[in-house]
Length: 219
Image (cartoon, rainbow, N blue to C red):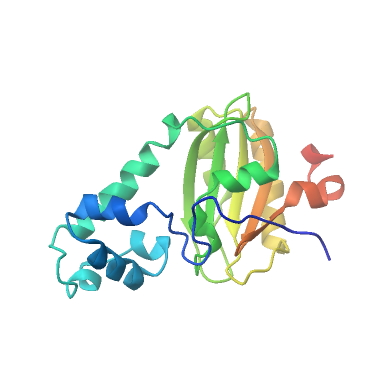
């Protein structure tokens, strides 16, 4: 029905979303061995699983103390809070936008919504997690999107969410949110550059495939 695009490599395991550097990073963070970290990652399964890991998940892993979960959560929070100061290149294509998004979107078992906030040169100034849904529905509120963008002072944005089913075809709800977000961005002097849908290791740019008929700003 339509073409899709995919990405390989770049130091990320496509099945789990884990970067190849995560094992030594966790060894240092948790003060334990590679063997223990590998057991932890196997139990977590994916990046999302690691982010949401509970005390009960690690209590039976010998070599991890009671502070392990606290340290892991703190690492995720620190990583997200440092996003605005990363030296990100300009996002000049849907492919570049896909690379700027969290790898976990391709492996999450539930739908997640994210926003790329960009400056006037299309450089990413912050990657914002909007919300989590179910296996086939994502809570992406246009009003919430407008509030986040207005407070950030961003010049342009790219919306993104995943389809755990692997399908890249936009749902009716996806179009409703995209059109409403476009209207909202115009009202606050911002630009909706694209809406990226991710399914596994593939992605679809709604702007590239449906530009002429669906969203006024993309004509």
